Length: 233
Image 1 (cartoon, rainbow, N blue to C red):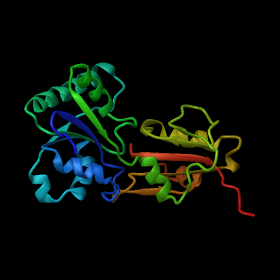
Image 2: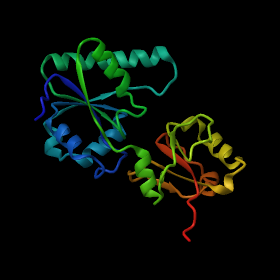
Image 3: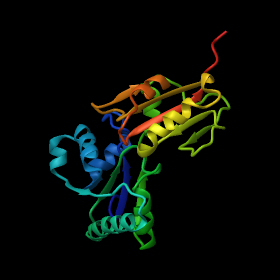
Image 4: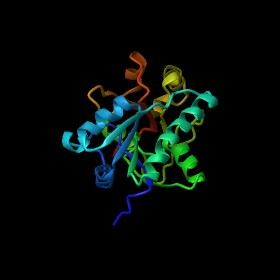
């Protein structure tokens, strides 16, 4: 049984495909009185594919703005504004869900909000979602890691991992793709990715050449680099 009241739930919606949501996340979504949506257009599109119009109509849906900037003053002010929306709702014993695309524990705006609320005595719970890189590997019909291989998420410049996952790189995508093409062992690597995975605007890039010829522009682009699987004997 769940004690839903007085918690802020960080709920992962998955990468975009409404079918890629966990049963637990669906149950918590249905129990929430209030849903907060950062990046409200994309999140709302996913949400509308998960809940029925009747279910959505029973909830208060609040869009919140989390600017994509490295300016600490602007971003801290945005988080404070969101927290100031949340705590009165919790004080009224509302069941509140903060929705994230993918998983709330991976590069998510839920993380600082969780910290601020807990510092001030409020309780939070994480409801996991399927992260984008898992959906990307499936969309490209590729394996991420095998056997004793290791995996590195969002490495800056390291090329030591067997598999590398690049996320949240909108302003560096072209540079990243070009840098990958210049790697000395590029012939030994498999490079693939997806932008807007699971949405109607999804684009799949199965090779580095495809990425080079028409680089993706979406912020929601994940690129995966791995050593090519050995051919079966």
